[in-house]
Every structure is written in structure tokens, then in C-alpha cells.
Image (cartoon, rainbow, N blue to C red; front, side):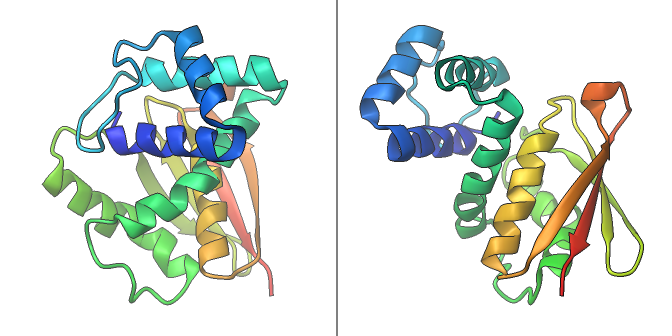
Length: 181
């Protein structure tokens, strides 16, 4: 997993819970990297998974909710450090439709070793956008959080329905983004 994900996770934990909690998390999970992350490097997925599990046990907050909250937090960092100019994208729908065909293409060009999720799209009822998420990492809840973070950025109100999930044995997750107003 890209180091930028880990640096954002450490920033979130420190900002929300303090440096002491971050150090405690590192002591408990004993990551191979020793918690020394740089944005351009790759790290084992298990390091993040172990930290989320430990944080969930400590706080009593469900791991899926923590991952979603992290996704929402992560959006600003990813947007601000996007390898292509996305500032001209005028709304959430167009931004979401550009993830796989524009943003991920540029990320892969700059970081060929990066493993990125696959997204497919279709129109839903009314203004709904259906996004199909597929990844060996099964971090669909982070994607949900990222979508909510993007909605906040674009000042749009949405809800998301997640009727099909890889965690429930499906081949991919179905995320129905419902635009309000």
C-alpha cells in the first residue's frame, strides 16, 4: 500500500487522538516499518489492517466505521496531492466519473507499482450514480468515506447505499450514490 495512505492515517490518529495514542498503536501492532512512512514508498497492507483492528478494540468503534471515517479524512490529502489537475472538475458526479479514467491512470503513470481499486459506473434511478468497486484489499468502506469526503469538498449532499459487498461474498461492491437536491 502506498505510503501516502499511511502518513494520512498517522496524521488522522494524531490529530483526533494525540501522539500518545499513535505511539501506543505502534507499540501494540509492531509494524515492520516501525511506523516510519514516506509517501512514495510501498508498505504491507497488514500494517494498516492491524492498526485499524487495534484501534477498533481500544475505542469500541466498529472497524468498518473507522475505515469509513479514515476514507473521509483521507480525501483532502489525496485531492490536494492529486498527480493531475482536478481543480477544473465542477461537481461531484464528474469527479467520481474521473477517478478510474483520469486520476488512477495518472497515479499508475507516476507509480507503476501502485495497486489501485477498479471502478465501473452506470446510471441509476433519477440522478443516482452506481459505482462498482473491486479490489483485493476489500477497502470498500474507505471508498464510501472518500466519496463522502468528495461530497463535502464539492458542497453536495448525498447518501450512499451499499447493497452488495465483497465482504458478503460478492465479486464486487455496488455503491449507489444518491444525489440530493
